[in-house]
View (tube, rainbow, N blue to C red):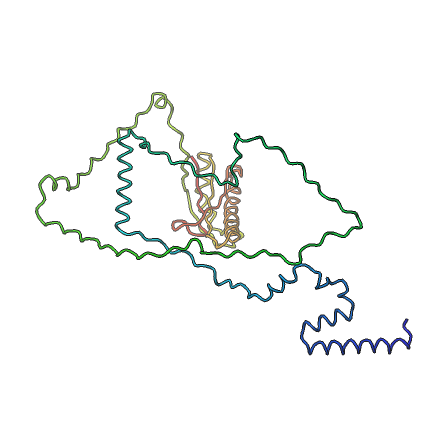
Length: 334
């Protein structure tokens, strides 16, 4: 914990530092930074400007203007050829093709150009001279651990190369004049020859193909005819509204004809009850369930009249114009 005697000292150092910063701010931003770094001791490891390398190069670089990126050369313009140049190129290609055809399909042999001269910098030494003696390896002087390194040059003498001409740019040529297409002459009107008229007429449609009658093999002809499904006979039809739990009294008298025909020839009795279509699946299912309930009322009445229950079939079917909702058909299968 700091004592009270040290607090005025710290406050005095802060006031002095603030005064130095304000004084440096009057000289410029760089002066403020350098003053602050000097006051805090951050510049004690900075290199000496008198002995640091490349200081002169850095000063020259700061004095030069910043490169302008807008000086990039524009893209080269499209080179247009004249009519005379295109004709000359076509003549050269035609002559080369004729020479190849006259030589049997191969190009005519021509003079072989001499090889380009080899630069002296990469040319191999002549073998006729005396043999070269290998140079002894260069001895690298080693310095002691506490020996200072040799001094390096303060500034470099390298210069930035200047580009003499920007490559890729070529002088533009005038665009050749636009050609004009000659008008196509109108054909003379006249009478076509009979042969042309005959070929222009549409050909008549071919006759319709007549298929021969189907031939049945002897094996198929020997088989018995297929057994068709039985056609039921509707004995009576009754109408029952929805929601009924019992048949009316006169309904049993109408079902008496069904009982009489069954006793004459026992067979399967089918009861078909028609249901109205529903909007959704649930409504349609409810309508079919109500139709089956109405069919069960008729089936119970027939069972009470003497027809065995195992001979009675009940089913529900969608209603149609001929069989509206609530209609029940009592049928006898053959």
